[in-house]
Image (cartoon, rainbow, N blue to C red):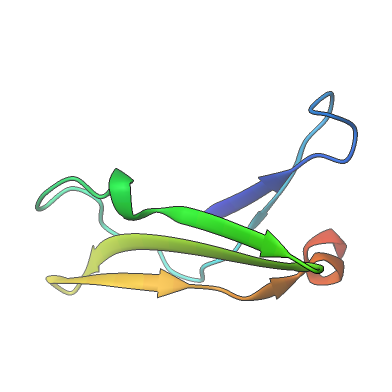
Length: 71
């Protein structure tokens, strides 16, 4: 899962991977309705779904804007 952001109105973009492992999006159902992102006060929280080891799960990452911009 990647988070992408722009500081110039979308002229240029940066992205950063927020999960460590690949997740399987194929086996069952539609996951798009459950993926989301929230941001407030310098914190970014991406939420995503997928299947790992046959189990459908929801993951979230809590990142600070300063963490995202380190690269």
